[in-house]
Length: 154
Image (tube, rainbow, N blue to C red; front, side, top):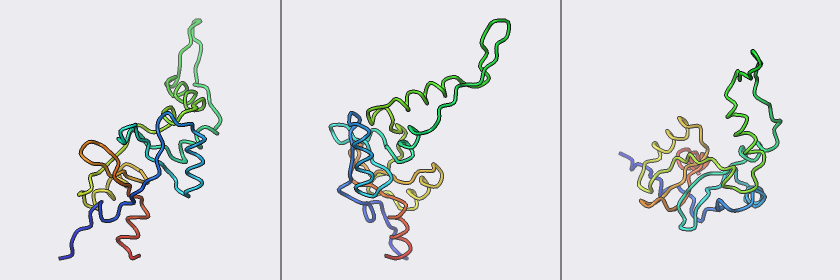
């Protein structure tokens, strides 16, 4: 029986990262310079606190759409959640990585099997999964390309 591939076997180390207080322009520059589509966001201790991706940066360029509402007896009644509009405004005005990054990050440990990483990617719709130690400190990252390369030839 073939030995099961683990995160440590295929992860990329020496990961390019940004901090939550870094300017968004820095994140954009690093994405372009390194030809990658996302960056882990780490705190001063190296713990993963978020992910910023090309998709997050593209959000800043979209048209903002005000919430749909109606007026009934002099009162405004929102027909959709106005919080969506407020969140979009916040993201459009973001200047720092921490204001724009995705805070939901799916991570794995170095001993987790590749099949677990692939399942996370497919079920959660993410393109990369940080590999962290027991304290949440970044050790590496596994991208979809890493899995394809490891499972379907070099």
